[in-house]
Length: 248
Image (tube, rainbow, N blue to C red; front, side, top):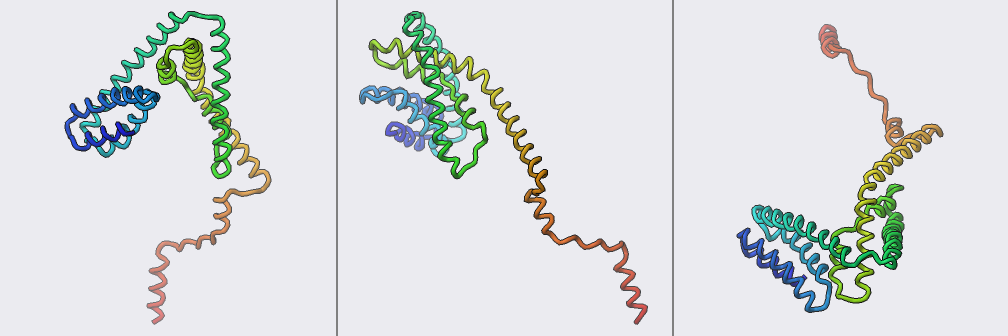
């Protein structure tokens, strides 16, 4: 946060997009190096600084021109780093090999991660459902759509060398591959099926409400309104005026 606020202050005092792009680049490298010196997570430190600059800084410290250049620069960096990251994943697998002990751990890691995701989603939704209403498939969708990717692998690769690093990398790689290939390719179908089920359930509720004689709120309001007065025929007002005039 400290490095993020320093970068925010510098960008707010300047209005030169080239310099501000370099400030964001210096923020990433500086925050990571400072985190390593303090023996804390470098990727998490960079993410926190990026959230500050990408949200608050983009709104209050950047002009429209600077914002466009900064976002385009980091979109390009993101594509390059994603390619390099998955290249490193492949190289790590070649170096580690396929140890049978790691295979068992990799297979066990997938359901464990899914169970942890289910627990982390079901408990908050269960507590919030006391006041808020959620669809029936909310827990299922949020659990299955929790995809893992580059950040998980980057955190595993950043671990110091130890006897457990190979096992952690293998388990992380298995979870990421399963997440991308299985969850990522099936989550759209799950969402569509859940939406279809919700529509069928809503139609069944409406049908049941009509069957037991109950009325919707709009129908009740329509019965409470007074009946409209009949419309007067065209020209009736003028004829009435003429009759009153003739009587006089």
